Length: 221
Image (tube, one colour):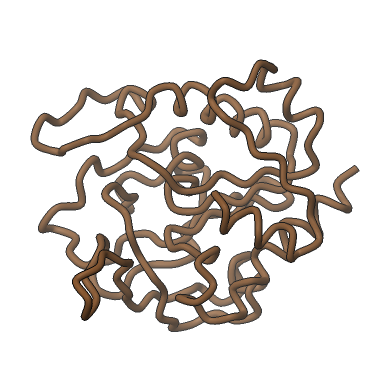
């Protein structure tokens, strides 16, 4: 969570971390917000999108976080708050809009998990994606086209899983897995599968995603 707090503060925002033991309702919480960021974390339980657990998928979920975050994200979208979803947060956006997830990327979608550095330490992998020119994602970061980003996730969204209410704004070049989603029906609802908060691993212009979220939050009310 610390990287998210840092980048929001750097962008001029006032972060308000919310945990599963939060005692306000989703609507009460959203009424106190000007924008919402859904970050990374454990797998989302398949029951959240009406599926049973695939026993071979090694799903590691946190039901209490699902129970808090999914309704909160839905309330934020319904209120048309500026919303940014990162990694799990993008997947949660897809679920809120009626989509599903691949429970385990496995061998079919290699290169999206962790890798080891020369010291044998776990870290994020990197791969190339294509950002659609003219998308809100491209306008937010300042450019579309090819870019190399980090990646570290166990679940994901392919075209067959995408909510028809969302537009795909970025794809992995290696396997076509969706790397960006956005809503054409809201003022600013953007999701990315990579981790722009890990600033040393990303091109610096991706900081503009957080600038965009905070700037729109300041203008929201």
